[in-house]
Amino acid sequence: MDLHELLGIYMDKFGEEHGIDTATWSEDGEETLKNMVKRAISNNEPITKKELKEFFGYDPDQPNILI
Image (cartoon, rainbow, N blue to C red; front, side, top):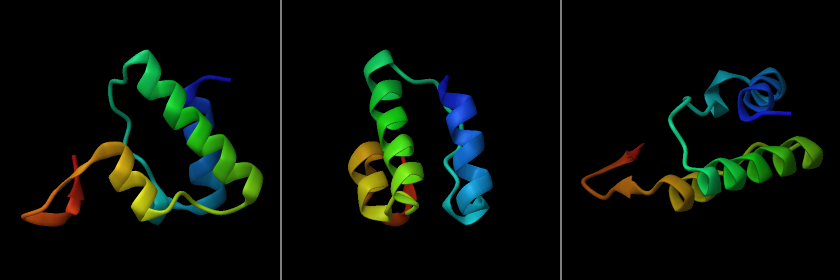
């Protein structure tokens, strides 16, 4: 299953408020995100904001915006 299929399942399960925008990923980044999404789906819990900040990083001047 590719990343886009997994993200579609994730969106269906948790809704848009927990959505992850599509982007261009390195192979390692895509694999890491796939594992995060698979874990979230299997545990029936959305990825936390803390996990997303650790994965994507964020702008300390605008802490609600992930980079």
